[in-house]
Length: 78
Length: 132
Image (cartoon, rainbow over all chains, first blue to last red; front, side, top):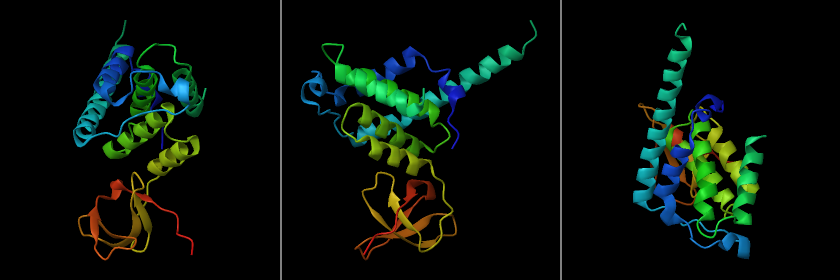
């Protein structure tokens, strides 16, 4: 399988922030991993799973669009 | 830096806990977003499971070798045929393929069950043969 480094280059901090905000409820607020050496990530619910699939699709689509847009503007003569 | 080194680095950041609250979603979600972008060639369900494995590793709830095994098995494509051993994407059920339907769907029988299940080919992974 080819890793899509081209799409990774189009990923922004804002995209990651959006993902983190959507999944916030699955994490423990306190830094338990640093204190106990045991991490925490609650299992996803059916609703989480459905929204995760949707967001994953949307993010991939957005990155692909950015890549295409960037490719067109790069190809345009200056 | 390799992808594994990146995930290890994110895990170490989470363990060091630079913030008072919510270190987990800060670092695990970076890993999840990286995985979603990098594994865009996988089908939606496989991509979701691969990014979830990375996030669970970074948060310290999944061992490194288990994450590597999960991502490797999700990255494999297979041309299924009756008799092949398969498991679900999360590995919660494993069994053997009974037949391939006309539309391409796969009918398989979980181990120890008499009933048959039907699945899309991309929602199954190759499973190692059971010993004994």
